[in-house]
Amino acid sequence: MPKVSDEHREQRRQQILDAAMRSFASKGFDDTVMSDIFAEAGLSAGAVYGHFEGKQEILTAVAEAVLDGGRLPAAPARQADGTPTHPIDFADGFATRLMDHVGGAALPLQIWGRAAADPALHAVFDAVFPRIVDAFSEQIAIWLHETRGLSAAQAGVRARLLASVLAGLLQGAIVQLVFVPDFDRTAYLAESRPIFDTIHE
Image 1 (cartoon, rainbow, N blue to C red):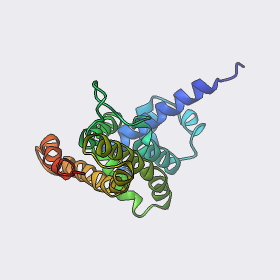
Image 2 (image 1 turned 45 degrees about the horizontal axis):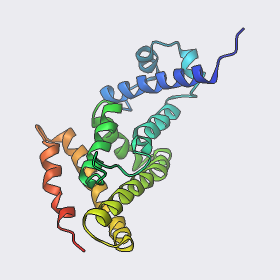
Image 3 (image 1 turned 90 degrees about the horizontal axis):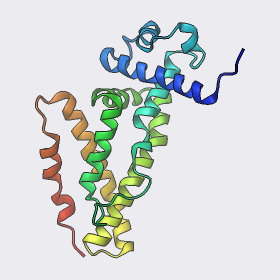
Image 4 (image 1 turned 90 degrees about the vertical axis):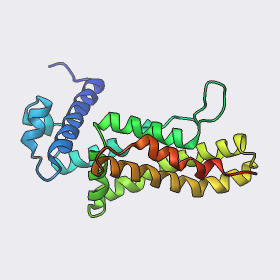
């Protein structure tokens, strides 16, 4: 019998996770059963259990995928002319990539809510979220230094505080996308720009 390659196993694992994301997003975590995931993935129970022990392990892996900071640029983002990308635009781009990956805002919101009471998901959040805040902080620091005239040291101190503010703005946008009809994320974030634009040396 030919050996299954690591690449094939990873592709199959991702197929299962993608199916689970769709199931969780449409039915919620509690109402999704394993048979829903089998059907959504188009795989047998044995194929799914060959990668995951059960629903909780799949849920934890989905949380890692949803919260994964891997959708952040490897280095601070810049415009075509070399100017650092505005922190609001940087965060908005991250949110867009995240929601494109998981099919909207509902699944991240479900995971945040469940993580408050689920130790396994809380641990995932604790591992991933600081990486996102660190990336925001690095982007803000470079933007403050190069466009607002702060020294590198001043920019670094200010950026650590502003990164948490920026993360909160983004979380607020995602919550309102789920609950507020016709919520305009672009207008919401545009109103937040003065938080950064009024900073001077």
